[in-house]
Amino acid sequence: MSQVLRRFAVLGASSMFTQLIAFVALAIVARRVGPSNLGSYTVALSIVAFLSLPISQGMTMVGVRDVARDRGRARAVTGEVLLLQLALGVPAYLVLVALSGVIAPNKTMESLIPVVGLFLFTATSFEWTLQGLGRMQEIAVARTVGQVGYGVAVPLLVGPGLAGIQTYAWLMVGGLALKHVLTVAFLVRDVGRPELRVSAGALRRRMRGSLAMGYASVMGQIYGTIDQIMLGYFSTAYDAGQYAAAYRIPNAVGTFSSSWLSALFPHNAELAEKNPARLRADAGRMLSVVALFAIPLMACTPFIAHELMVAAFGSEYGPAASAFALLIVGTALSIVDSTLMSMLMGLGRDRFYALVLTVTALFNGLANLAVIPVFGRNGAAIVTIVSELVAFTLVVHGAQRALGGLEPEWGRLGRIVLAAAGAVVVLVLMPATVSVWVLIAIGVAVYALAGLLLGTVSGAELRAIFSRPSPINEPAT
Image 1 (cartoon, rainbow, N blue to C red):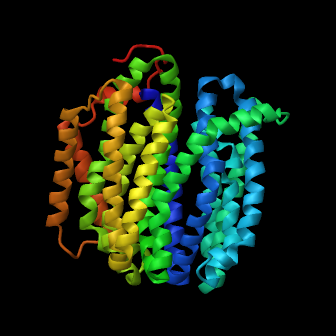
Image 2: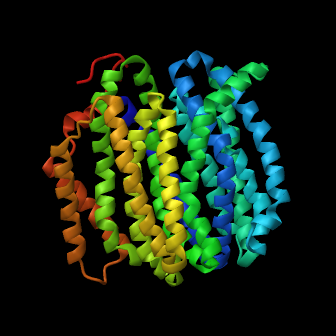
Image 3: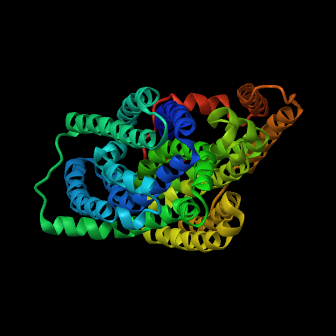
């Protein structure tokens, strides 16, 4: 576990920095282009994400697992995945552009699809290969450089209206391209060029082996973005823009948590192959790490939601506050679900992963179809919470069967709840005139102090993060 936490610390620190840049950039863009243009961009990006997932997450998650289990095959696995990604991505992009006038509900979105469609190629950066190799520092560098380039350009180049949101879309693509260049350079330096002389049989096997994960990724994207897309079609661009602003911070939290999953998944895949007993013993500690962030996030956000939306995006985004507070709860639950599912995927339970996401996506889509036309963005946020509870029930059942039971650290979880309650009490008692940024700082400080006094994390555990990593085949302690 200490090795996982070290890797998470590296990626998490870079993720916090890059998400801060993204948050500031979106705050600038939201004020300049307005809710309707921002909503059109967000819906266009959600549509493109559906096509990208089999090309990106489906193949790359299996690739990460293969590289983590046998690092000597990194070049061969990378070559196979890259060729399949290009074979699927190029025609998908051409079809997307050709049909943009049909699938876009307004002219703004139609003009954005050819640019946003380039996100189909995000997974060709070899970031996933570096993840499988455990090279988290290199991933952090590539992400940071790309995001800094994008962040510097946004306030200088993005103007008002349609032209502004089009420029913003191009700058997003440019930042990703810069990250791609660096990840390619790191891979070539570390292990050499990908092996591109791949037989047709190897590509077919790679494709078949990735089908379950690719399907699951599509279901996950349907679940994760159908609310935003439905708001664009069944509500208004204004409502979609408010929802996009409400989702900005939950998305940032989700991206930060992806650093945790990026560090965790190779560890789980390796343990599943070499030491399943230790994987089961680690499960309770993994859930405690998640609880340290998720519980205070859910407890404290409602008390600062409105002020934070207004301070970040402007007074016209104040109505997004209630959706924001609800979406944070859904995001916190999703981190728990993803942590447990990472263990199951490490064990090769790809079909169960696909089943869970299918059930959750169907429930989410049908519920949103009924709720969004009546209750709009707040209804969509409530459906997200209920959907995460459905996923949680299924995942816990699957984890208990696959791992032979779960052993949460109930005492530590109770101390985390008490520490979060202390922060809530302080936020409630603070005068209304206090700046939201000061409130956030006070809440974090109170929670950290209460956690230290209650012993939510021990000194020995903190020292273990910086100690020599234990071999993967050691018994759990």
